[in-house]
Structure formats: C-alpha cells, structure tokens
Length: 359
Image (tube, rainbow, N blue to C red; front, side, top):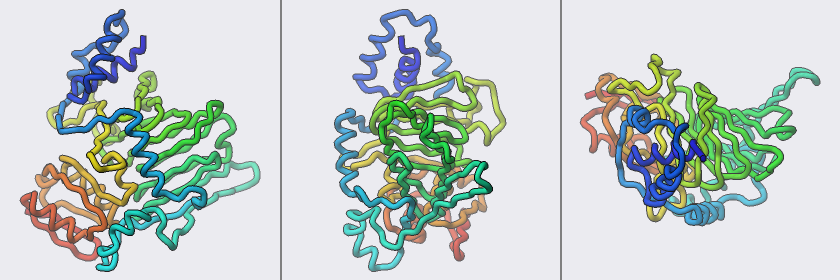
C-alpha cells in the first residue's frame, strides 16, 4: 500500500483541494489495511484550511498547455546562460506588450552569468548561475535540461554533475524542464527540500527569507524529501503542489502544534490554472508576470523587491498583514503601488529605489 499517496490525498481532502477523482482514489486505497497510515486527526491539527476557487486539470491537459507554451521558447539555440529583464517602464514597451508576450524569452542583449571558480586542478570546480533582482536567467545544463531562474535566484552544480546523479543546488525560484535519464536521477536541493526526478517539468520556490517553500508539478513525477524530516518522502503527481513552512525563520514548536498565527507545517494542494493561461499561477513569472492571490503585504513585498529591484519598508507593522490579490505585467512600480492602494488602506512614498509603506 502506498502510504505516502494516502497521506497526500488526505491532505488535499482536509484542505478542500481534492477532486472527485482524488476522493475515489483515496476510498480505494483505504479499502485495505491502514495500520501504518498517518492518523487523520494529526493532519487536521497541521492544516489551516483556506479554500479558494481553483481549477484542476488532467495530466493530458497540463501537458498540452506546457507544449503550447514551449512553442514560444527558443528551441535549439538556448545560450548557456543569459538574463531577461523583468520590467520595462517606457511608453514604447507599453505599446509593444503583445509583441513582447510572443517573444518573452528572446530579448536581445543577453549576457552570460556563469562564473567558474577553479582553485586548482584537483579542487572542485563549481558553476554558478545567478539571476539578479529585476531579471530572469535561462540556462541549459550539460545534460540538456533547461532551467529558468526567477529574479534574485541562484543555481549551482559541480564538476561531478551527471557521473552518478545530476545534482544541483537552488537558492530562490526556478522552473526545470528535465531531460529523462533513468540511469542518472536529477536532484534539486534547497534550504528546506530535496526533489528527485527522472524526466519532468516542475517549479520550485525556496528563498531563504520567505516564510514557505513550495514545489509545483506540471508533468512527470517528483519525490519530495523534507530536509528537517528526511524519513518523510512525498511523491507528487501532475497538477499537485506541496508547500512547506520554513521553520528556520521562527522559533520551532513540536510537530503538529500550531500557534494561532502560524502557517501549517505542510500543505498539499493543486496548482492554480485559469481558463486562458498556458501556465499555472505558480509559474507565470516565466512570462514576466507578477501574480499573487490573497497574499499578505509582507510576503508580496518580498516578491516586489526581487521583481522590481527595490527595497520596501513598513512604517506601520500592522500593514504587513493586509491581504492582497493581483496580476501585473510590464507595469512600473508606481503603477503597481497605485493599484494596490485602491484595495488596501495605506499610503506610500517612493524615493529612488526605496519605498516606505505607512497608514
């Protein structure tokens, strides 16, 4: 019996994310012995459900959308690494949005960001690919795997890549389209998660200063290990997402016990698709979009800092808890702040790249 799969399905049911297909699968799995299953009441203690409207797609539908999106990407001439600015504020770019959307990753003037550090012939050689704040980076790894790095993210791998495993380390957010190689599993390690795959497409977000880390699967399957609990392994199927609280940023409490203001230790849910989008909300940053749904102003500020390469400070701490939703593309920071001000009771001041939020 697949205990991990049962645990995932129960988690989706408790959080209101389960489809009828999920429920039918769960009922089938529960028809056997469940002596080793995680008790439902423990999961209920871990969860704080937040139901929002979501669209669940079947794996074939997800794959069709991903293939359609890939047609907008460079096929055979992807450079080893280059950056794509996330934002253009002049009026010409505003008139050219439709053209830019069709050529999202073909912006001229790309530069390589791979830095090779070789201390000596016998020492370890490491490749580093970094996307500065305000830019995205694309890279093709030695095995042909394609990686897109979001702003403020860094990917590293060493000279032994591909010998036994294809291992990379990620700090930040990246989308992986992994070349399948059954004899050389692909492993992504972040500050809180380790993901093991063969051939798949998925998004990972794990910034050191964020409250949560998450992995969202579009195609294939991934095995997720929690670094602070390595015995717990979770296998995701297409259209599923795992969100993990970054306990390193807070005072640790016993597993399964939550303070009123704490996030759940683990949340299992579906990725968020809208009818006309080729990518889920979790990966729309690849289309240079800033997308957020019912996020606190504090969490959104971190995204905006990376997206616009600015610094945001709160003069009043209570404003950090404002819940905001929106979707922006090719808007200036001034336009975004004006739009947010309409939905939240706050004022702001922009001076150079410093933004102050106050009542």
